[in-house]
Length: 330
Image 1 (tube, rainbow, N blue to C red):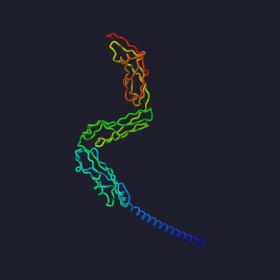
Image 2 (spheres, helix red, strand yellow):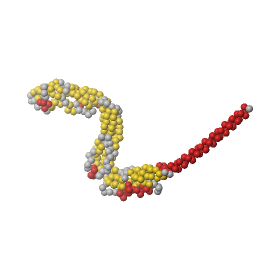
Image 3 (tube, rainbow, N blue to C red):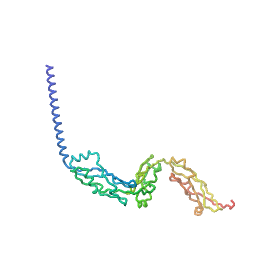
Image 4 (tube, rainbow, N blue to C red):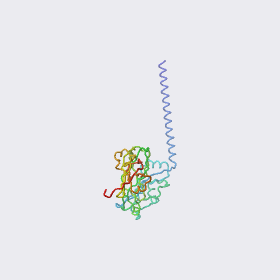
């Protein structure tokens, strides 16, 4: 009895699994048919799509320098059935829109071609059912010359801030000059070339950036970018003793100052700490300073401050003095 019951249960289980599998298959077939039907209806509707067509300038003579080339691509907006839009999406690339140099050259060094003149090439790359809605840009401009050039210095535009007052920044960039190609009338008006603006903040470590030059229509830069190195150094304080010197005194007069040396305290980066010494500073008193002095004190000023030194201050800021008469023989 037990064996018979187990056989019946096994038979019923297999039968139920078969029914379930058959129902699942039928449901799957139904879903696939419905999806195909929905896809057919969807793709049969009209859609707008933006296509990208490359642009190529051909047959440029060897003695011509194209200073500003035409746009690298056209963005073409079209309308068509979903089937054709799907073909465009899976299409790897369109054949380039060709601008022939010989057919468009100009003695002015500037050529402007309305896109309407290229519409025949654009529509030739589209299906007959496709409706062309718009093309951007609406005209293609390019500039050229016959080798006129000029070497100009590069001006760096920057806004660089460190993480605090305990840091200093030194910036260098290469190259510091570039060759520009343009029409003679343009070359004569240019004195320098500017980079794009470098903006950095909260710097604590050295940084390198590659900056493109600011583009000017009709001007070609060689090279067209510069490499900027921003060196960040920690500031420390240093004090040196600098002697007070005098100049422009009459031959029979000598200046005596009290004290004869003063302290100059300043902030400097650690890289320059050992290099900056008292010899890098000059405190000079002129005879005119003595004549203008009041209360027997002369205010002191630094005549020269070396690069890399920040916020120098003199202690004491003024000194006492006497002017001694000496014989011409002395």
